[in-house]
Image: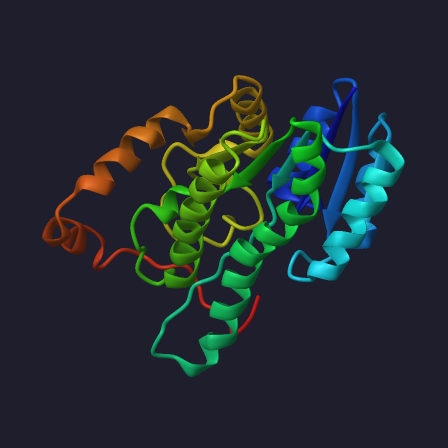
Length: 254
């Protein structure tokens, strides 16, 4: 029986991951801010399931959730830091400062808060996998989405540092960079989203990547090609292509 922790489990990719893992022999620990959504999801699943209403920005709440899960079920085999938010932001707008703070806190510090309480137990067991859901948006800065792009670039670098730090411990750190996934987060995007996957399809691919022992992957494969091209594209070409691109709607906070 595998023990799996998933943050951001109340919707989108997190819910899809929970449902896909629940097809097997598993104990789930599901974390999200919305208790009602977690309770509804738990009622639909036919496997042992612990729910922890918590904000990934709250390190004390995340430690408490980890301690409760470990005390009842032991050290998890897989911890997936999936919780994330996205909103349009402009540095020149003072009202967007709160949104910058929220996006970076949730997408980066929230990932740290998710992993930190489990690492000692995983090191002691010399076993475990920490999975961070980053994004292709971390490859280049997207206009109008500076906070999101910066947060995902930071997540990619953080996960690489963590992977090397844990190299000899028996604990793996995995970076997954999805392209466009059909979730409430992308529903507000007013522009074409090529190679979009459903949340269920994305969850299936992600679990397969984790099970195959991949440490870094961009998905789907078409987006992996686009990501490689974007990374090496000269600035003058990138600026011309994306300078007038449609932008995600702004909100004052997330």
